[in-house]
Length: 320
Ligand code: DGY
Image 1 (cartoon, rainbow, N blue to C red):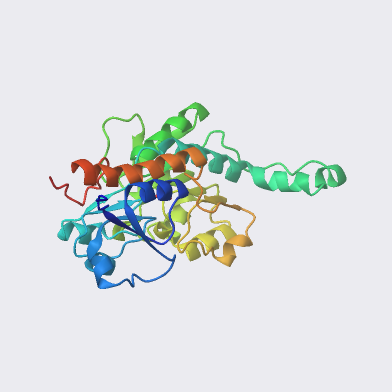
Image 2 (image 1 turned 90 degrees about the vertical axis):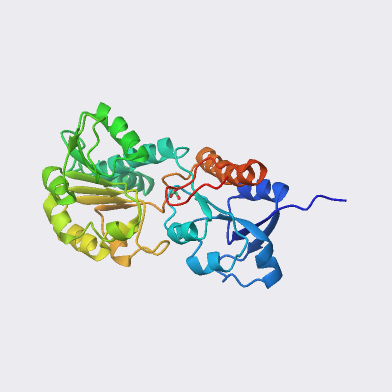
């Protein structure tokens, strides 16, 4: 008799390595990307685990009476209703730490590209303009002597701060609670941080508290020499206010890897030559995404084999 495998649901797309490992270990039910969770009752009843790219709403959790665990691909799990999962005794896991270095490296790259306009300079060269028109224009901005403020100083924020140290910039930060274990200057509020620095890097998650907190007032406080970098979540920014601030030179430049309604990027940003735009790639290298994929699968395998998970989120209890 063949052993009955545990059923795991993948609502929509999944990283290929995770998919391959999940198919080997479980009976996988995968729905089409963007589709509703419209499966026969007997299939819904069989599902014990979920592997998701940040998409598991409360109604979907309610449809799965025997669900134990939701394993999210990504450190950010704002698309998974973890509070609701907690009320049902369902564990949620995410993929912290394995992406810290990649995201921090990309942040430094984005900061330098934004300040020194390197992607624009490369486009100039590739268009043959260097030879025809002469040297690329000097950049008005430089990283030298900047004062960088980190909004968020968790595991990724700390890696960004460490990488900034050799650049000899001043470093401040704002978090809800002051950290006693870092040499950086604490600002008690976002406004205090924006007022005191000229470069603001946001690395905060999407929560109701962070929704559109980077608004016109914060950008005005950052000032005309100000550079805003976002590698956290786009929902923490009032994008209309940001476009206005960039257009009217309220701040000097912005580098954005995340947007309010991805993958839709406001057309107003495309027209601005003081915005450096990336399609949410901070952790998107093959090695890092493979590590994230493995962690997604290891959390599920760990739970169903040994009742152990590696990286539960704080909202959810770990049974057993
Ligand atoms: C995450 O892990 O949340 C990053 O934004 C990459 O998707």
